[in-house]
Length: 129
Image (cartoon, rainbow, N blue to C red; front, top):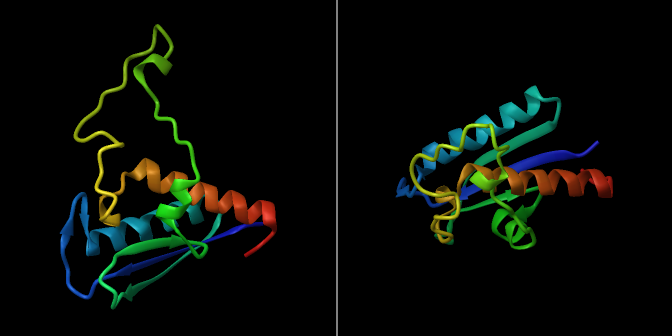
């Protein structure tokens, strides 16, 4: 069975970067790991790791989230995807496609979960981890 290991590397100083600051990002990732564990997925969070290169990153099973996302075709649920008699989607705030790719803390939840899902699927397929 595959495993998910999430590592968050961040600058030594606390900054607000879009949706979350680095403390918020750590709590967010720890919450995702807790959700996966509750669902029976072997998951772990390593961190926080302070980065000296000034770049904040998240890696899943050793691969940077941005690199994982570059290899995916993500289709967002649109109002047109709903059944005719079903209520339409209500969107509050920014669109999931509106984010600053230079700040990992700004990544939307749906994109982070897609990256984690891809890494988990690859770990199960390869029999690694």
